[in-house]
Length: 64
Image (cartoon, rainbow, N blue to C red):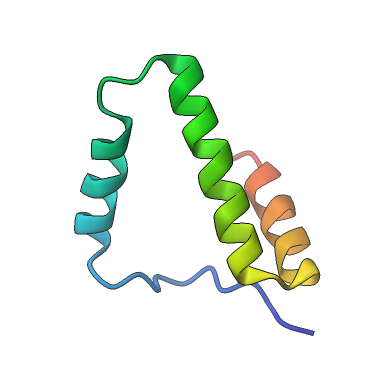
């Protein structure tokens, strides 16, 4: 079983964040939400491991 990696693991995180914001620029709320949904599904497909995906869902659902 794989474990969800919650440690910083993105090369160039600031650049990725800027790119993420850039693709949302000029979109309506509905278009932005749809883009996020497509991105989530693409990333989930890339990860592929159902246990890791379940761990990610649980982690994302936690409220501070």
